[in-house]
Amino acid sequence: MTIERILRGIAGFFIFVSVLLGHYHSPYWLFFTAFVGLNLLQSAFTNWCPMMTILKKLRFKGAQKCQTE
Image 1: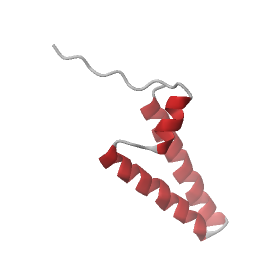
Image 2: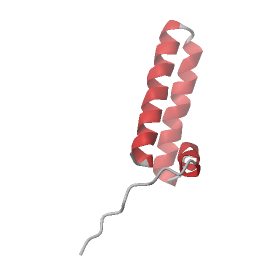
Image 3: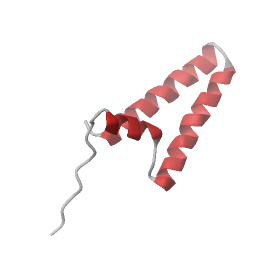
Image 4: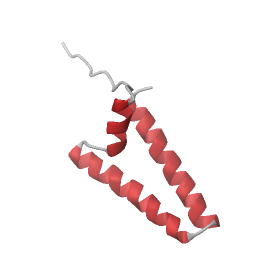
C-alpha cells in the first residue's frame, strides 16, 4: 500500500470512530471530526500533512509517478 492510500484509510477510520463516539458518548468528539476534515482540506492546498510525515518516517513508500513518453 502507498502512503496516500494508508492516509485515506486512517482519515476515514478517525472520522468514522469520532462520529460514533460523538453519537454514543459525547458530542464534543465531533470537534475531532472537524479537525480531521480541516487537516484534509489544508493538505489539499499545501500538500503537507502531519500523518504523511509520520508514515514517511516509518518508511512507507509514496505512489509511483506516471512516466509519459
